[in-house]
Image (cartoon, rainbow, N blue to C red; front, side):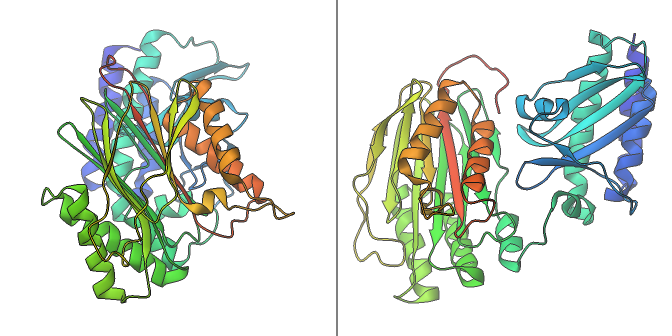
Length: 400
């Protein structure tokens, strides 16, 4: 049985050390906190950018045991956002997710002596240590490079480095709303981006795809996102925001460059989705486990090419509906024979995952894997997807 005093001591270890800790200190902090709970060892694992493997955080230059997300107990704890325990002849292992709010970024492994039981008290201690340690990891990320280096399986290009730095967390959940996004290829992504914000009862959501590749495309999407945030923070409506973005792209890049995108906002009380589509693939509405509508009209010229006020559209969602926003790199991903991933395959995938009841973040993680597998792990273009689920007035519950 894990006593309240042991739990308090474990949390105290983290709180006392955090003020003078850098990223390199985190593995020892995790072990020290786990020891107070009775664990023989405690290991921090961080998920890579593709969300396919988890790598132990270590400041030492040693071979690190990499765990697959698919087909492992640790992967189930990560994917299902739950605590898992396994009793073996040598020790009891408890795996728990590491969360930044509702954004998954790894797992914590506790190894206890054999013979212990994962009772409610022990699991509660593991949950509290995992929750506090997750907050510590996030706050230490900006103070050094160990966390970033651990999460990277391949070196990033300069374009990808800049693009990832401007993204919001990949998952956000409230009692009324769930938002998840994913980008690929993680090490080379350039012109694709997305953004969201929750202000009061209004969720602001946008997705962008800048013309071309490389650094110029990154700079265009960065300006689009920067102007989006600037307009949003001045309480501008989607129509005005679209014109602001158009002006920013035109002034910086001239009349021959453009960015496609969707800028919208969802009233989480009424379920009314209001958006402006500027040259972008239409979003999909998933209801009851199937795609019921493609929001394909009207489509205005891209940002940078607008010569007049764009049309604004509205759609009233039903409780539980999901909006799927994506860039053309998703549907135009080709396999070795030249076959596109296609809208039909995208619709079929989202439909099946929705019917299975998987949360937004896990649906997109699996979609990202399917797109990568379709192209044998090598994408010819950025592929970005954003999923917005309106939960209406459902009771507060854990979703991510």
